[in-house]
Length: 109
Length: 121
Image 1 (cartoon, rainbow over the protein chains, first blue to last red):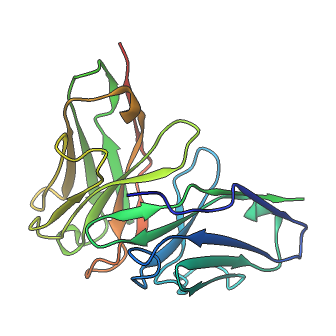
Image 2: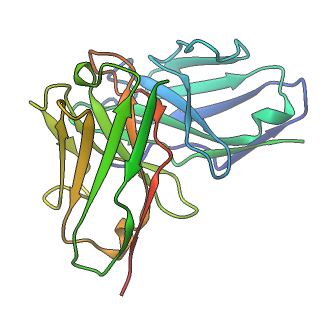
Image 3: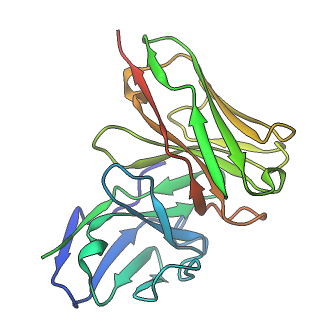
């Protein structure tokens, strides 16, 4: 049960787009369409942003989108806003367990 | 409104035990799988355990298997995590989380506020 691999940090200016990758294996990310993404602000509980690879829960802006190719999933945030600055975690079902990525800190410059 | 409220955290010595509870409200608790997720201080999220809506299936992370037990009481709308043989590396904020769908997809749409567990002598 090894954690999914995410970049430690990404950054972008307001209005720009950023993409966060999440790399796993054929036993997790590549094997199921159960990839989700979470946003976490300091001292707060995580918030679901994307589920089933690319679906957005109601209330999540359409600036957030998800995709997957092989064993790598991606979260793209377009039209960056100051409030998007947070930690982001990917998550994948893996059969009898669930894995999180190590987390990516997004800085809005 | 839809809500999860954890309780039971605290300070415990290595080798000790603790039982966490998670009270659910605002949704049909008995229809959804539930999870425990933890976050060590300054670290990332770690999935801990899952229990099916009816308690018939339970899954655990390797790091807690054999030491932690997840359970639920649907008559009380409450989720539990019994933690035994606690180690320093179990120190974390423990969140309970609801699965998004009745057919579990291991996506967590509702989270509690978290309860802190500190394992220290």
